[in-house]
Amino acid sequence: MLRYFIILLTAVTLTACVDRSISETVPSALRVGTPETVFAVTSRAREPDGSYGYRRAEQLRYLEMTVSIPPSHTPGTLKFSYADPNPDKQFVLADVNEFSGPQDLRKRLTGVKEVTIFVHGYNATQTETAFRAAQLAHDIGIPGSILIYSWPSQARGIGYAYDLDSMLFARDGLERTIRELKAMGVTHVNVLAHSMGGALTMEMMRQAELRKPGWSKRNIEGVILISPDLDVDLFRTQMDSIKNPPDPFVVMVSKKDKVLNISARLRGTADSKRLGNIDSIEQLEDYPISVIDTTAFNSDAGSSHFVAATSPALLSILSSVRRVNNTFGRDRPGVKALVPATEINTDGATEIVLTETGAAQVTSP
Image (cartoon, rainbow, N blue to C red):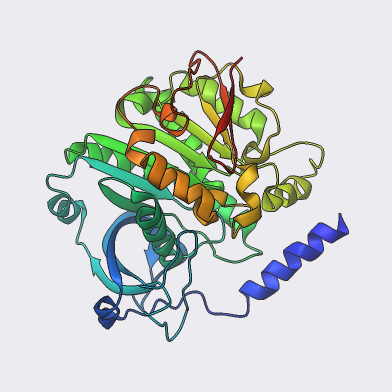
């Protein structure tokens, strides 16, 4: 146990060495970089200096951010600086346009039929989240527009408890964001959530279902939870409330996720697994979901807790073999896009174990 606290303390010390609230905007970065538009809906409070930090806001705010992707960028990497960024080598925030309300977002999304909402996890700033969303959109080729739901994370290694409360606080805002997108005429709303953002997504869907059964499937085209920091028993109760989840519904896991191992130990559950690092789908076999095991790609990933975004090999499969719009596709079941020519039983949970060659082993209960 002491070893895990040392690892956590090291992470806290490293993140405390820099001021992560700095979000320098460099318009000239677009002279060398590739622009990627990232829309944002945030439940963070706006600070006097114009930044969005960890304080919680009663009202949602809407923004359009332009991220410059450096010409030297390689798939799976995310290089940026909190001060004096180098647009030749780093992701740079080139422009921020603050909307007066959802009506301005509606105007910008006129004619857009597909929006993917990226929901970040614990210990994340708004700018870092925009960079990650831009990287995913660029590396995978996410169709339509990308929008981040930026909830009030404290963005500190020691802020885990605060972030848990903020995650619950942010449920209403995420539900409202989806409702507003649908009202704007967006026909396909996808949710891509990482880590604690997966817990937020599940809690949001659960509360919506309790009010209006069937809401999730009517309003959300597809859900992908990446390395969800979520108790398996809790996930089961959430799924029991949702009953008929969006299709496809994908959970991406890695048995070598070190962060989730620490999360389990800090909760006093060292012998159990979080949803994002389960080693068996036995407890999930009653639910119409697909569990994709990415453990084989851990060796070349920049983060064992975000293999789907930091493994060049896995990103190559996602982008060149089948595009994300097929994964989220209209032809059911969408997860077949990752494993062509494989018959999948969708009556219960399906486990897909990806290999470094791009092949897959598929098991269904």
